[in-house]
Image (cartoon, rainbow, N blue to C red; front, top):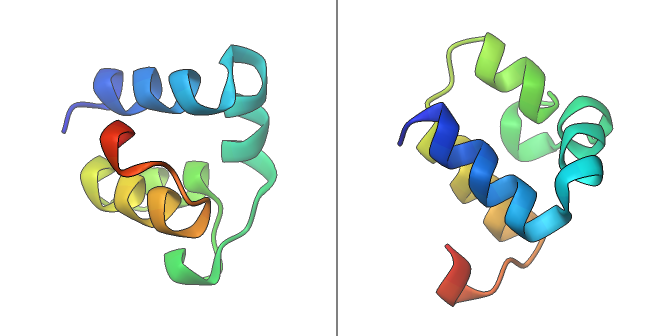
Length: 64
């Protein structure tokens, strides 16, 4: 998954303003105790991060 697609999905689910805040501030144990931004910067694949976000935040299956 390209980062542009990842951010598009984040914006669609959380809203343009909140997606960035969520990615910066929400620490998830499923990402090794990191935020989305930290996980992506640390080399996690965007698709894997999106899967974690979907699971943790109960993103509807049709939006995954």
